[in-house]
Length: 356
Image (tube, rainbow, N blue to C red; front, side):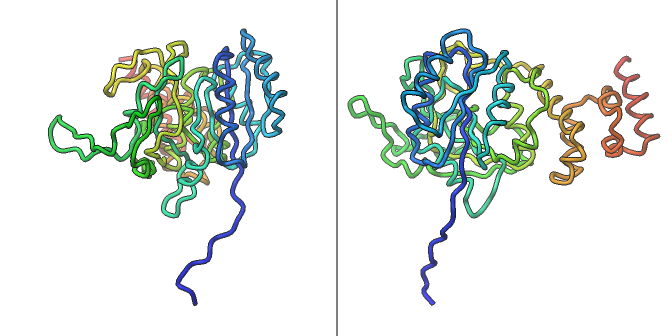
C-alpha cells in the first residue's frame, strides 16, 4: 500500500455573506465588490438595506443590475430595524452552512472566505465561529493600523517587563504605494480558544464567520434591544457554546470614519477601544442572552447541556430578578433547586436583600 494518502474528494460548503447597510451609499459598492473578488466562489450574498434615508438602495440595485451576478441580491426593509434586525432579515434569506455578517462600510480581503473556511475545516478543533485580524483604514481607505489588539493571535515573544520586541519579519515593507509582509505564512497561524476562556477574543463583525447551526440557535426572536452592538451578543453567545478559532492573518478592513454607532474614537495606538462600550450595554446584552436561553430552554438544553444553560442565565439575570424572569418556565427554575427552595431564595430572600 502506498505511503501517500489519497486526496479527500468532497463537495465544499456554500458560504453565505450578509451585508447590512444603513446610509452607507458612499461605501457599500466597495463592500459588495470585495465580496465579488473572493477567491472562494461557492457563496451567495444578500445585501440588506435597513430603510436608508440616503440613496443607498438605488445605488445598490443599479450596481447589481450592472454586474448581473446571480449570487447577489438586495432586500430593503420597510422600517428601520437596527443592526440585529437587519442581520436577522439577511440571515433568514440565506442557506449557507457558514455565514459571514458584514457591515457595509468595511471590506473583505480576497482570501477571506477561503481562509476562514480552511480554518473551520481544520482536523484538530471545531468551533462556533472564527475571527481574523483586521487592517484598520480611514474614511478614504488608507491603512492606519495592521493589527487589532483584542484579537488572540501569535505575536512576538513577550519577555518579562514592558519592552516587547517586534521581529523583523513582522515589519511591513513599503514598496512605492504597496504594503506587504515578507513572511506572510506567519500570518496564517490559527488558535483555538476554548469556550471556558471567557471574554472578547476577536475584532468586529466583518472579521467573523459563524456556523449556521449556531446562529440558528442564538438568533433572538426580538431584535429591538440589540439595535447596536449586535456582534457582542452573537460573539459572546456563540463562543460560550462552541469556542472560537482566531486567525492571525489580516483578512478584512475595518473602517474608522467616526460616523457609525461604535467606532467613533481616534486611532491612538495601544490597546484602546475604537469606541466606548458602556457597562450597561454589556449587562443588557448578557440579559438578552439569558432571556433567549430561558425562552428556548427545551430546544437548546439537549444540545448544549443544562450546566451551560444555567451559567448563561446566571450571568445575565440578577438574583433578585430571577423569579420574575423565569415565570412560567418550571424546567429552568428546576436548575436552581426544588420549587420550594427556588421560591424562598429567588422569590423572597434575594428581592429583600436587594431592597435592603
